[in-house]
Image (cartoon, rainbow over all chains, first blue to last red; front, side, top):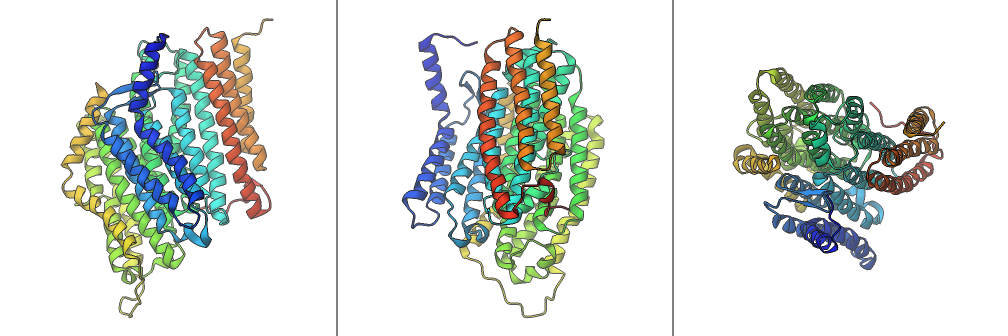
Length: 495
Length: 102
């Protein structure tokens, strides 16, 4: 595998580094942002602007990688269109989260030093980039730890607020347990096969050279690690607590970017390892996970009275819809997952942005305090309604397109998964109830006739929410390019 | 009796079980973190034992090194968070830090 000819190795490394440019740009951003905070002490958000610029530069470098398909650093990482799609998605959500953070009163209170915050976001993005392309088990573990360690700190960044510190404690304990179990599973997998490389491992497994018991136990342990990241039931118990306690921006980041990266890693692992397993049909396991995740996520969300907690259960339910796409696990299924995650990113970021702006004004995320708030903020209220309709999957919004492709993929794969699609559709109906609950509180409770004084929002913050609304509406009507992009990425992934 | 691969695997499985047991039963956050270290070290023992006795390549040793480094990083972050909990609550009892719940 490895040729120890020094010249070849050097050539391979320099080739790897040139393909690794976007990640290097992120690392440079991470370090520069820390220094910017020290150098420009007077300028608030100096490091925030640096990270935004760094993310844009990373995006430009990513654009140069269209169509590149390579294995870099002695097959540690794969650079392919599949990873590129997820990297773009993660990059967009990091940028939006950075911009959202500028407007958060909770974060910017009392002249808090924000340098570490923004540089940790760049670091977390780096970890997620690695996870999208990891083709070696030790790389998967490193990438997951890179994004976890930074997110533990970010969840408790407002450290004088009790619930934030509680959230970070729960997150660090649950997160370390799940990654510990995952690495124990990897050690068993290594013992059973003798390799950490997923490509070699896939060959050994399909040749039947890996024993049954270690393979099943190790796969279950590794699924537990991924399941934690994508908050699939029964590994979801941390999600509501952490989303409620963490700053709103970080909840949005965890709900979108972290979940997307987790799915990218999980799909690659499942596609290479689980589908080759001759002993057990893992599709059944994934289908059970999907049903549990959808049902428990949606049914628990009904009883919630806190907007962030409700969004957490909604994020769990959406992970269930995406897991349905993983059950199919062919080109159509994976491209439907990519379309779904793309649509999901914008509507979730938008909903969290509005929740954050409301919390800036009323200092609470309690749904009872939302009574009649739609009349005090007509523009933002209208945007929120669009996001909620999209999350519920109503046409003509982006959420409908995502759900449509997932269900189509299930029906196209044959009649054996039709029952799963039916459960999914029933769940979407249930989900409409609790999204409608937010809208009911915003518009139907409280007095519309009173001369209510309106909240004033800075035009920049309204512009940000408006920009997030554009893709939610646009991709609900004109979704051809996204579908084509996803299909092309998957086609190259399978060859 | 010669000590072979099986003995190492049994010890690592016991360590793993003890780690889970510590996490489930201990109330003190520091004790929970020690349980986590046990889990990570049981994985390390597995990696090294397989690489040594299984006649496999060096990857196992390298993996163990990486896991050790990450365990140190994780402990650093976790201890900082526990310290913050102490400043807010004046105790580090995991069972009593429960204001966030359904």
